[in-house]
Length: 152
Ligand code: HEC
Image (cartoon, rainbow, N blue to C red; front, top):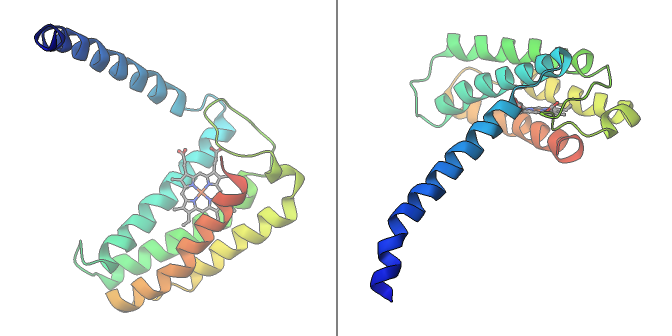
């Protein structure tokens, strides 16, 4: 019995693997928003993630600390943080979107959370890896604060 189970397990595993691969393909296709307004705000969030990642890697010593590069990422985050409100101003939706409708019913609260991120970005200290790491806490808290309230 055990033997027979193991005999069928390999084609079964193949089927499962194929199924998962297909499901992943569908998920990838859905990640790409059709609505250009939604795509623009998701792309801005991805850019925010990239810049935050650059800083996080430097702070953690994963990449060499570079004050010029850190300052550039900080300025980029300030510029992107400034765009959050206008990018989310229109109540646009898309199947790929994770935005909650509360964004448009509680705009003052959304603005307050966008400002919190802006403040976090402006407060980044790019003089050393240690100071950068410490100052990143407020920024990360601002991401979580808004996502916890306005993102699925
Ligand atoms: C004021 C609110 C707000 C702040 C602040 C905020 N986000 Fe977001 N973020 C959102 C919302 C809303 C979405 C979902 C957008 C959608 O899917 O339409 C999102 C989506 C994302 C995504 C997924 C994008 C995609 O392609 O699906 C990433 C990554 C992300 N945010 C990173 C960050 C990081 C990193 C920070 C902080 C440095 C941050 N966000 C700060 C509201 C915010």
